[in-house]
Image (cartoon, rainbow over all chains, first blue to last red):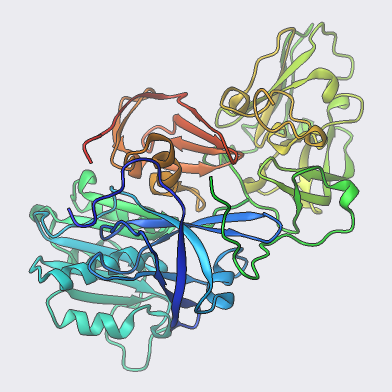
Length: 248
Length: 203
Length: 87
C-alpha cells in the first residue's frame, strides 16, 4: 500500500507553507511540505491545529485536495465570514510559515482505482475538495473508471478548480456544473439546486450500482442523499461527508 | 510530548476584555453565541408544549404554554459560561423564575433533574435553582428564544456551566436522590461551578 | 434535519487518537433500533461534547468529551462496534 501508515497514535506533524494559490474570491489552496507525511488516500482529511502565543488553540478538519501521487499536501480552504481558523489560513499565512496537522484520517469517504463500478461524485461548494483528490488520483494513475462529477456552485466565479476541471474532463471524467444563484450570459447548463431529475440525467443509473460520494454543507448532503436513495441507489453505496461550522 | 508549534500571528476569535474579573479561569470572552447541541432541534408545537414539576412533590404541577406565559416573568442580564471555554457577558433574557414555578410546592427533595424534548437531562441541587438563581427563559435579546438556542423555552442557570441550562426544557423532576444527567454520566462534572473550573467528572 | 449536524468523519481524528486504528469504517450496531452503519455515516452533534446518533432513530450511540490529556468515551446506546484492525 502506498505510504504505509506509521502504526500507533496519530501525532501532530509540522507543515511548512510553500505557496498559496487563490481559486476563487473566497477560496485558496495552500501547498505544504510535511516532513514525515505517511501518504494518504483520495478523500481523506487532516486535522489542522493552530496555537497562539499564549497557548490558546483552535482545531479544524480540512479535506486533502491533492492526490496521493503528489509530493506536497494541498488543502483548499474557503474563507468563512465569521470563521476563526479559515480567515487565518486564507488571509494571514505566508510561505515559510508553519502550522500543525495530523493525518491522514478517514477510511470511509475514500476512493481507490481498485474499486469496481462507476463513480458519481456530487459536490456542493467547498465539498468538491475531497472529490477533486479523487479526480486527480484517477488521472495520475491512468485509471479508466467511469467517473462523473456533478458540482453545485453559486455562480461561475465561485467554481473552485474551474480551469483544471475543464482540463481533466478532456481525459475521461464527465464534469457537469449547476450554478444555483447566477449564471453567465449564454449559459445553457443547469441553473438550479441538485434534484432527483438532475441526478438521474447526469449519474449512472441505480442499476449500474455506482459508488457515490456526496460532500458539502449538511443541508446539501441531506437533500442529495435522499434524492439518490429515492432513485433506487443503495444507501450503503452512497457515502457522505458533511461540512459545517464547528461552533464553540 | 513536544511543545506545539506557534502559528505566527494567530489569535483566534478571543476578544480582549478588561472585565477579566467576570471571566472564570480558563475561559475566553466572545461576542458570538455559538449553537451547541447534543442532538437534533426539536419542534414541539406550542399547543402541545407543557411544563411540569414532577417527582417528590405533594402534587405535580403543569402549565400549558398560555398558562406558562401568563405567569409573572422578568428580564435578567447575566453572564454565561460554556464548558467549551466561551463566556458571553451581559446576555439579556426574559423568563419565569423557578421560584415562581415552585411557589407553594411541598417537597423533601434536594435534587432536581431538568428533562427535555429529545431526551436530554441535567441534574442540579434544588438550592441551585431557587433563591433567584434560575429561570425558565422564553426570550433572548428582546426576541422570542429561537429553536436553535433552546426555544420555545430553556433553563437558565447562569452560575453553573451552561450545559446545566437545558435547552428545550419540559419540566423539573424533584428527587431526594441525585441522578446524574446526560453529560454528567458521560464525563462532565456533577456540579459544574465555572469559578472552581469544575469541568470534568472527578475534577 | 439540523444544518449544524455533521457525521462520523468529523470525529475521525479523535477516535483514531484513542483507538489507534481507522475508525470511520468501523461498523456500529444501534442499541435502540438495531440498525448497522459505518461510523462515517453516523450523525454527529457538537454540544458540550460530541454526540454520535443513529441516523435511523436518533438514539445517542456514543459521546466524546475531551480535554488536553484525557478523553471520556461513553457508549450510552451503542450495542457493539466492529473494528477492522488489519490496516
